[in-house]
Amino acid sequence: MNCKNILEYSLKVMKEAGAEKAQSELIVSEKQELNTESNKVKLFRSNENVTLKLRFIKDNRQGSLTLNKVSEDAIDEGVNELVKITAASPQDDAYDIAIKSDETFEIGVTEPDLDKVFDNLNHFTQDMKAKFSKISGDAILSYDNHKRYIMNTNDLYLIENLGYYDFNMLFAAKDGDKITSFNYTGAAMTDLNRELIKVGMMDGLLEQTILELDAKSIGEKFVGEVIITPHCLTDLLHVYSGIALQDRCMITDVSVLKDKVGEQVASPMFTWHANPRSVDVGQALTSDGFVAEDMPIIEKGILKNLMLTQYGAKKTGRERSKNHSDRYVVQPGKVTLDSMIKDVKKGILLCRFSGGQPSFDGNFSGVAKNSFYIENGEIRFPISETMVSGNLFNIFEEIKNISSETIDFGLSVLPWIHTDKTTISSK
Image 1: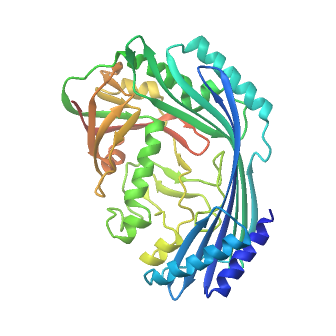
Image 2 (image 1 turned 180 degrees about the vertical axis):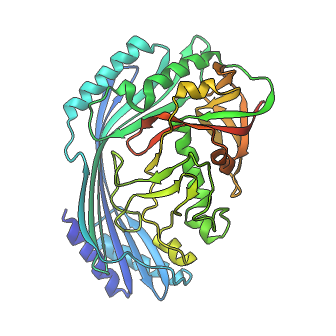
């Protein structure tokens, strides 16, 4: 398969069909994965997917289409459909394509060491048998390779070749008739030099899950403190970005941070960057075809950048962001996690949150999963049927401390955060 020829042909067909601007993106993804079942290495499988994404702009109208076949006949048929889609779309002068660029990026592991994949996963199963016999769950260790080729009528031609190992596990604890809710963790890696039992704080979560067999209700409602784990923080940052920083909330003018760039929006302890170019498993290109750059989002509590695509920037009259990636890095603090816990008078260790999307004003409510009650500086017991509610923006305004320890998930590097003034209640 000649990827450049496919892109050139698709652009030619779109221009002949009347496109004033056109962009083609070819993605070739390969996965080779090894699975465990009942703590035994069981199944190896591999697959490859090819997709072609086409964008067609004419008369300030845009159509987009994704094809799973890349033959000339399939492209011809797809472009015919794309012309109809474009003609039926609303006019919008914010539609555009990326500017001219010609670069190639190689990131991570270009060729997998499958023998090491087997050895590491086999060693992991032995650790599970020896240390965590009450845990039930299956793990997957894979090598993933994603090649992206982007070409457009602005003479842009970008290539990104990203390869990495991905380890993840979904698990629960079981002891007789008692069983916990499921938990999960994992990480992406550019090497296999770490024991898998240590990746993504796997061993700590497995130990916590076994303790959850004896979970109980707190039995009251109070406003207290919360220590947010790196796993939970990942989800909260995604939500924060979605309701306050990205295209949709900015275009619809509902973001509470829309006019706050340069102002204090969080605790001075809090520094949050989107760093697709410097995390272990990085990302060189944005979703809309620009070369990505690292950037601060919030620095010492001050909002530095929004996360706008080219379309979002033109639609709102603001600056396009250097990236809109979820490769997040939060700067660690100066106190240990143990010290943070000892500083909690009454609250919870929030390991996972299950709830609906917060409103655009940041108000949320949901269930604390795989979490623990803390009182007078000690983790007392795992909790069940516990609701957590509050305001997402207040969480980051009310930070009391940030841990010196971090978890490197490959895609992101995050600490524990100690915050205050969250409502905690048993069902």
